[in-house]
Length: 206
Image (cartoon, rainbow, N blue to C red; front, side, top):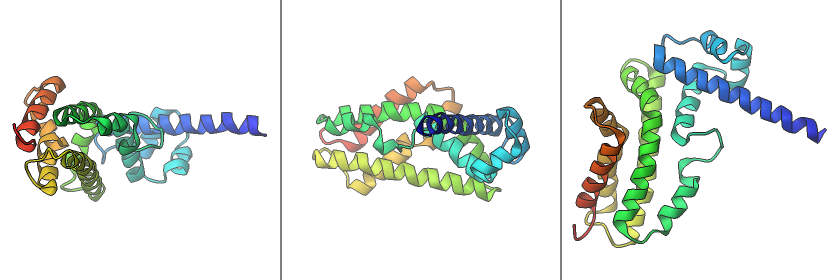
């Protein structure tokens, strides 16, 4: 019995992953509104009933596609539960803390940039997209509050914690990344700019 359960669970997980990947590809290529569950099912090579069974609706698929892009896999562990955070939390040199967070953030933004462009552009008219954008911005602020708290604990901040969170959201967040990407900046240049800017804006003695 147990031997049969594990392969079945693995197949279910693989199916879900394939559906989410197909949805993400289609949302980016054709837009959220134009993409149907039938098209997603066809691309994922499953029955449309399978898509409904696992996800129920397109909004859930959008959220799953964004979540998958954020962490880069389908392991049910959020950003703040990932091993990289332990390395960052153990670091005692403030600029190095910023470097570690920004390097990880670069990976996230590179992955989510394409699908979040779709979300951003449609948010003004589509409630699902607006809700997803708002949720993403709130999650970003939550993560940056952890970073600001760590810098504060190191007595490194030159501004109050909440002001630091605002600065982090402005300089390290998705919106700035998309603006500079649209201006032709490669991710490496964005990363250098953000580290230098945050060090000057946030750290004592800089």
